[in-house]
Amino acid sequence: MEILIPLITMGVLGLLFSVGLVIAYKKLRVEENPLISKLEEILPGVNCGACGYSGCRAYAQGIVDGKTEPNLCSVGGNETAQKIADLLGIEVTQTVKKVARVLCQGTIALAKFKGEYRGINSCFSAQIVCGGNKLCEYGCLGFGDCVRACPFDAMYIGDDGLPVVIEENCVACGKCVEACPRKIIEILPVFQKVIVFCRNKDKGSLARKLCERACIGCGICSRACPDGIKLEDNLAIVYNPLNLPQECLPKLEKCPTKAIRVIGDERERISTQQRAG
Image (cartoon, rainbow, N blue to C red):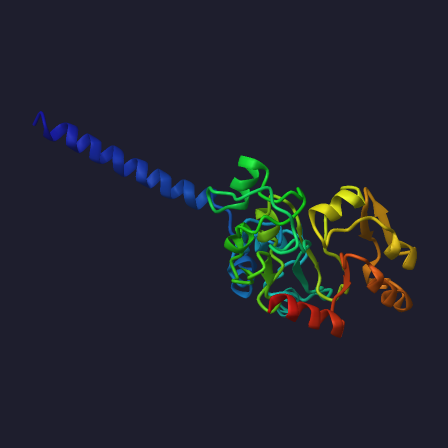
């Protein structure tokens, strides 16, 4: 009996607590909006975070709560946005397809190096240890942190030492941008044709010594397109890339270092093929 009474007591208490918890759960639980699960089924489920939320379910919750727009899923694109709009009975603005762009042309052949880096095969590590192995402190280090961060196999390191973006696979999630310690990768509209492929802010004479393709701040591009291209800190900045006058585009070819280019032009495709080969 000395053992039996405590056992019975503990059993009764356990049963009472269990019943209490069940009652509390039924009384206090908050019913979840079934739309959240339906939206989650529509979303691609990759949980990349490009929409600004931790995952697809959190994004679905944000849409249902009216805290965010239904067209922020870069992975699903316009098709997913339209399905969400149809489910919710609303209209949605078409998303603009974007793609990652590597804003550096400092290849193994064109950039100058401090020496040989021997350490962890990581851009972040090289940056921490010695500031990178390139003399240009704005150039791509080429150790592939961006490639490893990409969850869609949309990047690889080319034979010239620079990352190459596979546009068909890129969903503009921004993981590569976060991984790059030099911040030379940007997410840009895929139809943006005029891009400055450089981030060097050194004066022209020094910039050209460090890399043959660096922007030297000569101002040829800004004079050709004064309403859309400006110079800031010795670097050309394209402020209005989608509305540059067509007549000014041919003049950009006069850039002495080819730091600014018109993407999509036949000469650009030929140049890219020659660089890759």
